[in-house]
Length: 146
Image (cartoon, rainbow, N blue to C red):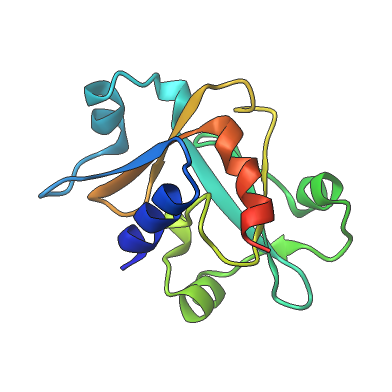
C-alpha cells in the first residue's frame, strides 16, 4: 500500500525518484550495486515526534545516528523525541525501520549535512522495496505535505 502512495506522490508532484520492487528479499547494498549507487548514498529517514504527535523526519546516512538534542536544534524545537515503533505503526501503518523520506502527510523533513551534497539517495521501504530519489527533492516535499 505504501508503495502506491509513494509512486503516486512522485508522479503527481513530478519528483525525481523511482520505487524499485524485487520479487524476493534483497539487501540494500545489493540494490545499491545493481543501480550503481555508492554505499555512502544509502540513507534512512529517522522520525521524531513532538508533544502533539506531529512527525519531524531527519534524513541521514544509514550508518549515522542522531540524538533528540540534534533534531531539536535542526527543527528549532524543544520537545522532539524519537518516534517509538508502536507510535509509527499505529499512526501511519509503517514500520519505523522503513520510514519513507517523502509522502507522510504533515511531516516536516530535513536532510542532514551527512548526505546533503549527495545527488541521489537510496532508502529501504521494506526488505523488497526501495526508493531512489534526488536529494534536493526531499526537502521540497515539505510544502507539498502541508
